[in-house]
Length: 231
Image 1: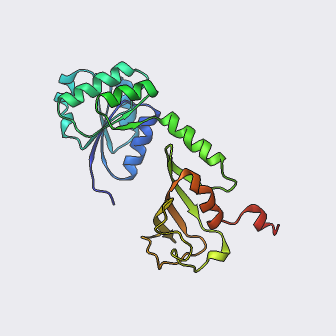
Image 2: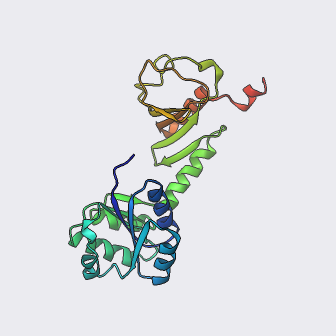
Image 3: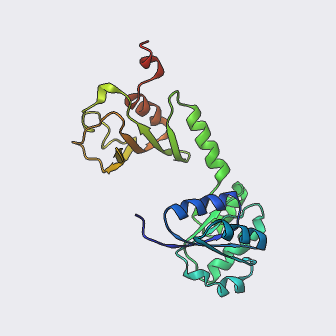
């Protein structure tokens, strides 16, 4: 289990709530901030594990009062109001917050955040677009978890009978320049892969792969619909 950390989430919206839901599952300490008292009240009422304060985060004194520099990570989810996002981030930097993750509205917003020295930037719409396009490329069903212009994190379940019992080395699935197997999940147990490990039907592989290599990897590991029908 991940080490318990403290997270400050600035801005309550769908993106922020998704972050909260994930961090709750990981049993992390979460504090939410938003200028809208009603949103804070609703969030705190919905989650026993979440505390919240309504305040204007563009004002440095408010951030100091809340001890914002003490959190392990501060996530700024507001992007619609670019000015508020920028002022909040500048104030966070002024008081010594180092680990900042910021949501960007568009490429212009991203450029501004990079100019401020923010390296951990998320553009949800762009990520969703990459994932949708990548999934549309494949004839078989796989779970694409994250994706950028070059690489994707994918989860693939082994359904091809011919590779049952073959080692990762024999299948050329290890020490490959195009992808890397992070782990193999078998009946709920996580296996860290070695070249002598063998695959079984039903194994779930978490793989970091080049986008242009995913299709070949899926074809190797999964039976296609035509093969299932005997065609």
